[in-house]
Image (cartoon, rainbow, N blue to C red; front, side, top):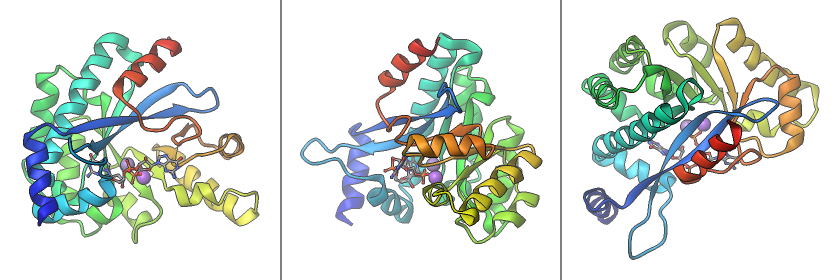
Length: 254
Ligand code: G
Ligand code: G
Ligand code: MN
Ligand code: NA
């Protein structure tokens, strides 16, 4: 209850900011996208991890206001990158929780924010989880409406949910983010490589992008490219950081 009240106050007082983690093309490492990751720094204490406060925000419904703030802030940065870098500007990935997908206002909110910033919809991808759309229903309808706006939709943590393959027939996603657990286990054994290869093949066959998540070593990056991955994200390339670091990296890539 205290954490919920502190979250509410923190939102009103502007204690949140976004960190951005690059999503790169293999093998050269050029930035083709960034994932927005919310950070909370209360003025009187240590940084609180989203792993701790997102579940509270979801339970209390605060995720709707927090999520709107994330959409607003990420679109503002995306629009600035679009102005400064044109077609080479990175796509911005925004995490959207299950609770947000059940809000019938979400598609209009995304559409009006993009319009206000004159942001091209192909500069935005919303990251959802398999679990959020597993049951079909309202969340799945929302995803379809979002796709009609022209934004991308990525299945986050792909492969860890209960429904991966069935979901691909019904849910119109554009990107699979292959969960870190599959990437961690790329240790050269035939089984692990077969799984990682199948996931990139499924994506390619269905015309989807596959992004390998949680890449931490050079060896993994080289192996992933050999297994057919074109896109990757992880500490090996860059940790999440302030928007200004993305600006600097984009200027270097020019
Ligand atoms: O940034 P970090 O790896 O600590 O994030 C921890 C968890 O919080 C991840 O599961 C991530 O998807 C989630 N998360 C980070 N930012 C957001 C956000 O803006 N909205 C939602 N719904 N989840 C987020
Ligand atoms: O659930 P989601 O995939 O949105 O979570 C993203 C989280 O993964 C963020 O908290 C981010 O900080 C973390 N992350 C990103 N790259 C790596 C990595 O290479 N290793 C580890 N351990 N975590 C990572
Ligand atoms: Mn994510
Ligand atoms: Na993920």
